[in-house]
Structure formats: C-alpha cells, structure tokens
Image 1 (cartoon, helix red, strand yellow):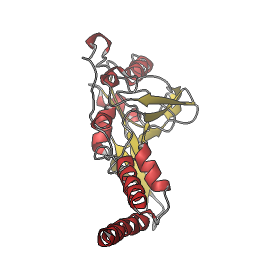
Image 2: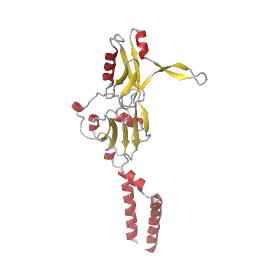
Image 3: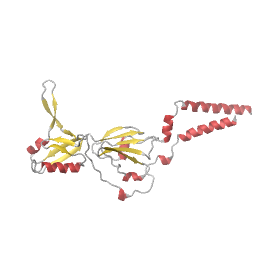
Image 4: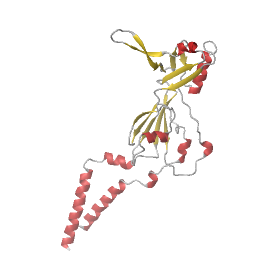
Length: 260
C-alpha cells in the first residue's frame, strides 16, 4: 500500500515539475556587456515588390511639379464621371520592382533604399522637368507581423518605417510566460527569397543581430516552450486524471492510517 502511495506522489511531483519554467528561461539579456563596436544604430528601408508608395514632388515652380503629383479619383455611380478627391496618388511596386510614374514612365526601383530612390528620382526630374526638386517618399503599407506565443498576435502598421524586434514584441503585448525566448524566428523576403534568422532574447547579442531592426513585411514567430508543447499535446483528460490521482492518494492515505 505504501509503495502505491509513494509512486502516486512521485507521479504528481513529476507532472508539476514538467510545467515549471526556470528563471534563466525567462529573463532577457542575461550575458556579458554589449560590444558597442558591433552595435549598429543605422537602418535602411528597402523598396520591395508589393510596397505601396506615396511620392510627393515639390519645388518653387508649382506648375512644373503639378504633372508629377496626381490626385486619386473616384467614379460617380450615377453620372459615371470621375471626381478628384483630396488624396495622394499611390504607386504599387510590381513583382519586377517597377512603378509606372507620371511623365517618366516605368521606373525600376526594387532593391533601392529610400535615400537611393530619392536621389534617383531627383536625377530623372532635374533639370529637364523641374529645377531643384524636393522628393518625399513614404511606404504607406509598411507593416510587420508577430505570431505565436505572444499576448496579442497580429499584423501591425508602422507609420514611421522604423521598428526593432523588441518594439515589435512590445506591440504584441510581450511574450507569454510559456514562450521560448532563446529561439525567436524572423522570416524576411530578400531579393525574391525567403530568409530565416534565429534570435536569442536571453542574450545581449540581440543588439548586433541583422534583424534587430525589422524591415517591412517581416514576420516574427515565437515558439512555445517544451512544457507548453507537452501540455498542448497531452490528452484532454490529463486534468481529470490528476484530480482522480489526488483523491486516490488521499483515500489510500486514510485507509493506511486506519489499518495501523
């Protein structure tokens, strides 16, 4: 009888230990000092297919820039006529990395940084079309996606086009306590290929990672830890079995005491 009680207690202890998470698996940035020589504070916004660009051209000669700043139009269902609206025209970067820009026609801009594109467009405009043009470019559909074991998974628009992986996790409400912090996956599309990076949030090396600054359409995936996976894959009756085992232990203990 005593051996049955001991074995049941041992089983319960194992089940409780399996669901525990140690402090070392939770605390961020645990190792040595950050190597400042390897930390980069620069980041680039790279223009990619499926980006939606807002491009604004300004100059002292307002008439000269008018053909390059088209307004979006809507169509009236009743009169079938086009009506201008106070909305900036946007340009979708196609799968070849091109946009169809007014007057200039097809422009291949895929893979350029925003600064490179601005310089490229200024070179196209001046001096033949506009004298001393100013060019502003913004990606209107810039977003990142955070999935997995976080509090609020989803896609998040980034209006300022600058975000770190830590800020992205913050947007998603931080990791759940059951998340695997040492093996965060970042998936990025680069030169038409899907590239995957692994990031360890427990290490200060995160600050020197090539994905510390995220790019548009990056996907951050947080895996659940081993205990969470085991819990999810366990039979749905596990809780009931533990409860029955606890009652059985109490009952066997009572019987053992009565038999003494």
